[in-house]
Length: 149
Image: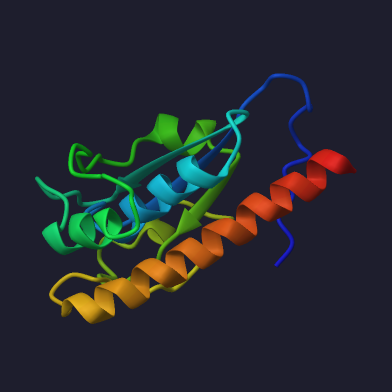
């Protein structure tokens, strides 16, 4: 998958990635945290949900702590028009709830189709975390290649 961030100048402008899912309680929070870990300071990430909950999935917090990232102070956020408008790229984590799927509200998104960790055993949540980390690393590597070009 080729991502293009060339629409923005390569000066000190930050590129912004928005990771979205329905509740902003697991997948998108993990993606945001991994992106912040692996990307340079030129890039920023945020996450949001179309029907956000009041707290992050405790298993998501636990599996991220297992890899040295603390998301326990993160709060689920509601996706806003400003977030959509200001994002260079938008990544939809996957739609499990078709009534609140982010792709109903935004277009031209990268859809990862990652399984929701909600209600899953911890081993499955770890697998989901690892898949998110792998995909975030791919995005970061693509950004680095584009900087060189």
